[in-house]
Image 1: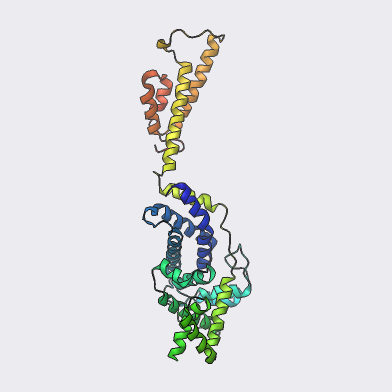
Image 2: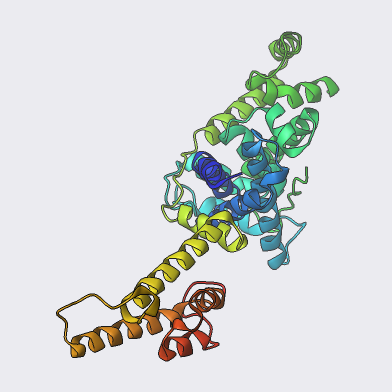
Length: 182
Length: 176
């Protein structure tokens, strides 16, 4: 891969990778870090990537980088593997308020849903962003993530159930909401 | 109940138009009979519309430069860096050669052409060029210094030689 090809890939995929990271991580600085790391990995591994598959390869790398970052952040809070009380607490407090994606305007429903998605496993959140926001077909996601379409259908089904639980749950102290782990 | 779960699992593909005709018809028939699965389809549609309607953000304007810098930093032997290095060395050697041709006597070239400069002006110009060369040498990396020494051998004035031989790291750029 020469610099012209790299530049072309950068220009055609930069915003897509950045937006994916932004909605997975909800932090513009983290999203920039992930985007940068993804393209550095692309440059380093360009010899191993099948020509024409670079966009999918970038999405898989961005997906993995986002997951790693979310896990690190959760581990830092000593909260890995347990429900994230902060995500639930944020629900009523940030209704209609600008989110961490401060450069863009979200309506109230989008804000509430993104907050609820914080309770999902990072893999699942990333899959939802790919399917619904990036409008990637299940078959396409399956190829990118090396999963089966059936596994993705189950993962999305479980995520929908978990979101419903979170969004309809009464907000009381000690509320036990099981984290979706798919 | 198991049938409902099977159908619910297919709802994302159903709503996204990713089912084949047979599967699609099976889901449609079940939905006609099952209010609970119709409610689940409504939730699927809400999820689809809400996330699908998220605004796309433009990446920050400096992100491109940041990525390019990171790529260069990650790959010090990348072709562009090598090209830039070679170009820098070539320019430096050419500049040094030009300066030397102007300021150094060359017995093989015969007598110097007549000119109207005074000895004092020539001495001042020579001093200025030598000073510039010495200053340039301070910012060259070691490899570039070696290249200049190799090309010009003993033709360099002492002040330039001293600067080139200084074993100090480059002030900016280069690999030394």
